[in-house]
Image (cartoon, rainbow, N blue to C red; front, side):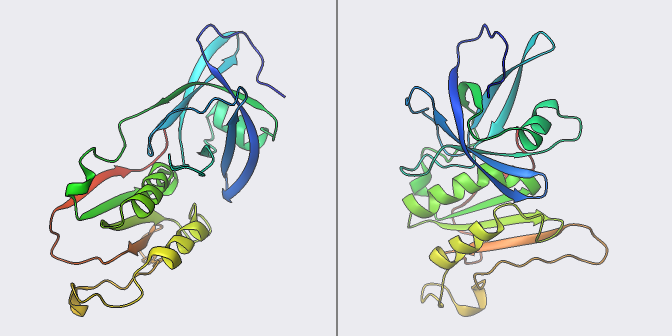
Length: 230
């Protein structure tokens, strides 16, 4: 199946190869270029898609949850928005084999070019805003071993936490398992995921500490705050 309608803008056709439900009303769509030509992008960027609706060309941008690392298949993660015509179609009706059309990747929410000068990186997000952060997190962990990274991620509940299992797996792989001699124990935050929902709030925080996390912050960088996808 394909989203039909004439489009004037140059574009590339992407086939949905798999769909995975991440949380209620949230799905990840794995994509592959129909012409087998890879789309160049950086971790943290988004894809802009073209849709034909009511005789008009419409555009929507969705952040990529895939990183630009080799072997990480191209993917977007989308949350259903009640009044969003295209996010509703994706969550409710899109199937494997459907074709999406994109103008390509863009966006400035990426790692700094001089990332090697940083010792610590902090990522802050809430809800579906984890999407680009997840791509950045994977890139930092796998390509920049000398950098300490902390993810602070808020959600209503564990069930609503997008990539909850994947984040736990990252913790198991990259989380600090013992006290580092370079960081006193009293300054060490034990690597863990903590769903904490105060009685006065409907939102809690999932905190993921990966690699040694020491205070005070020295040469640290807040890469960005993300609350929702494009």
